Image (cartoon, rainbow, N blue to C red; front, side, top):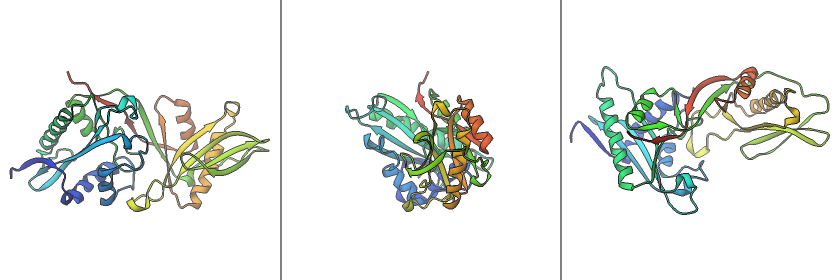
Length: 304
């Protein structure tokens, strides 16, 4: 065997590949890591992607092994071309994620391994004869998607291979529920707790009319995945009717949800907003959120 080899993933690689995945997760969200079982499950299917994942026709996982150590890994997807598949995904190929440790003085050949693995990924996409080639950084962990700005080594690799950012940019924010600003509800406003689309919903009502709602998801760590970070939740939805704009209802809903999260043992709350929505970003900052990173979503292979 040569010192550097790119090959298909083997089950014996699971621990070293998980270590690589967790190194990248840790650079995005503090205190979160995933289990070997989570990584293996992600290679077979993505249960959280209930719309897109059924469209996948083929999966491939490749690793670069250097002197007996897995130093890079990538997971690829090929989507079917039938009418049931969303138009942008029909006959598309995607590097779902790519991980490798940045080169260091004691491991200068790590970039060579990553380059070789990227060439192998492009070869697979060519063999699949896909219509379009996408790339992402969607690791099986909360808030890790797109290409986070905390992964400059992966960005450089993607750009060097001909991938370009053609989508939007999302700001990832974090707050401690205990630190969220407390605001009493206005006179005559009540809050009802129900099941929502993206978690537990809290809806503000007055005189039988809904003013707005917030949904918080406390199930980011699926029980069978054993994610370290069980005290983590995220905002699935936050919406206030136009008539209630400027009343500070968003902050009051956040504070109300925070009380529920503390009862759930949640000590960190994630939020995601477009970098162009300055109003919502200012609202979250005023409530106690801090920016973790920015992530660029939507990468497409546009060589030349």
